[in-house]
Every structure is written in structure tokens, then in C-alpha cells.
Image (cartoon, rainbow, N blue to C red):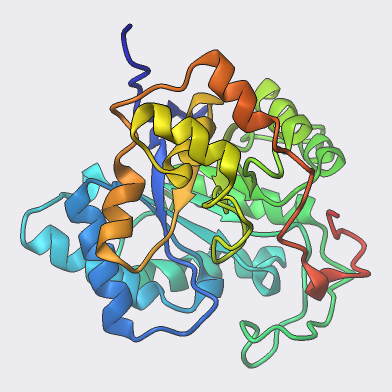
Length: 311
């Protein structure tokens, strides 16, 4: 039987996004060089989709890794698909361009392939908003006004595609029905893994022309949800000579969305990219889907009580 082999996802902006991406968020602070080396390994392995964000506080390291791999001719800028995200304290329309220019400078790039509104929840600025234990909610800014400023970034050539992250269905609908909408979101990045299949939001986003990207496809920020040693996933994996983690990632790809993997270990980085030499049968897709428990692992307590808190 012919394998399921597409490796990219078409965006409504006319560009293509690699289906398997390398995420750069780590809750624990790591040595700068550790992250740089992990990213260089990821590029060497074949990752071309790199997911960053201002909030992660490491875009200079991400940029250094990209610079070194371009200089040694492993990859060209055009071969990479680089995503970053607008954090909540930059959502006032007059600050959106400032935010993307900060990320571009830190990354050492002249444009982003995709720029996302990280959460639909504007906040006030503070000296170090990335500590974010108790942000002050901005009750004046509306994410619809933020989106109008995002559209201008495309017009100025600073970003090629724009999208959203962590919106709920009613918020997506409100955005799509916004008066004067010029550019529809190209992508919606959301939590998805076998224990939280997020079916309704996936279907709604895709049915309205948005590609979808799954963060935490192995569950949680550190992969400790029980997915990597789940007996159902392990049993499916044995059929293909693959691990439970590879099964979970492949399940996501075959559902039609991109997945973001994350690791600092060379062997794990390689492992997470070895997804193209097998295809889950319909029966095994159903088996993986059966472990869903609607267990959301990423809960934004910092936005609790915000008028735009999505869940």
C-alpha cells in the first residue's frame, strides 16, 4: 500500500508549512548553548518548520542557530518556515508592529513566514511581562483591533502569513465576521493530543479555511501526560516498529494538521522526525482516538477572569 507521504500543509495565504515543526518553548531555563545546539541538530535532521515566540525569551538563541546553519550552507532562509507570536502585552494596535520588529531583530530575520496572536487576551505592559505571575488585564483593547494591525504587517512585508492561537470557536467566529476583515487567519495553533483531541475546534477552524497546528502533541509542556507510555499507543507502535510518541505524532499528521515536537536531546529530536516511513491503518487511528478523555493540560490561569479568556 502506498504510504501517506505529504510533508507540507497549504495555507490560505498561498504558502506551504511543513507538517512537522520544532518547538522552542521550555518551561525550565536552559543554557543558551544547549538550545542553540538542539536547534542546529533539528535543522540537520530535517526540521524546516521552527516555532518561536517573544514570550519564550530565547529568540536571540533561535536566531543564532538559524544564522549558523545558513552560514554553513545546511539550509537557506527560503527553505525555512519560521513562526513567532504576538504576546498579550503588545496587543494594543499601536504596539503590534513594534512587537514583530523586536522578534525579527532578535531572530536576525527580515520577515516571518507566520505570525500568530498568541492568546486573545490583551494585557497591560510591565517591566518583564514574561514572568507573568499576575498580569494586569487590558480591558480597553479588543483582539479585533489587534487583528487589523496584524493585517498591516502583511501589507508591509514583515510577515507572509498571519494567524491565531488559543482562540475558542466563538472567538474565531467573531473574528471571521469582523467588519472590514481583509485577511483571514492562515493558521490556528491549539493544544491537541490523543488525550485531548479538540475535535470541534479543529473541524471549525479547518472548515473556515484555516490550517491547524497542534502544540503539546505528546501532552503537556514536558510530555508527562502518560502518552509516551500509554499501553494502547505502545501496542499500536509495536505493529510498525515505532514508539508510542511516534504513533501519537503520526496520528496527528494523518488527521490533517501540523505537529510541534520539542526536545533538547539529539536522539529524541531524530526520533520525533522519523514519521514518514509508516502509515496508521484506519483501525489503529480509531484505537489512538479512543484514549481521548478531553483532558486539557494547558490552562491559562494568568488570564482567569479576563473578558476574553478562551476557556
